[in-house]
Image (cartoon, rainbow, N blue to C red):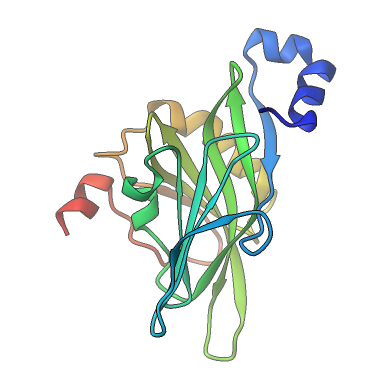
Length: 194
């Protein structure tokens, strides 16, 4: 069932929706309040896995292990390439997810992550642009949260890069003035071969 916000969006922007222009919608999630725990954690490393129904887009699957988040999207989120990638340092995937939508269908997700940068607990944020390809999903681009107009760069990257991105063979790209994002910069094919 579509939420009133979704319906309201199309009521206010019928020409954009009908013309197939690209728009944004947002899904908030809270692991303790709005998500369903589908896998319990253990007493050592894993905190568990949660399914967060994406009201404006596909299912969002979030796992936490060793103080790192793993996020996948869609019906086969747990099998997706995106779900196998996380930042090297401790991190947290943050709510909300921004969905980029064309023709009434989400084709990309943009999510902000907080990443620990040093032993004193300093952090920086990264926007992760994920392609939604059928039942799968893969990281396409990373934008440092401190990058000028980071949100707009993330939207532009989603709109420009996702349609032609080949998850199996293409390597994600970066917009950053603080260095690389500290995540495996490999294609899904390379990741599967590791």
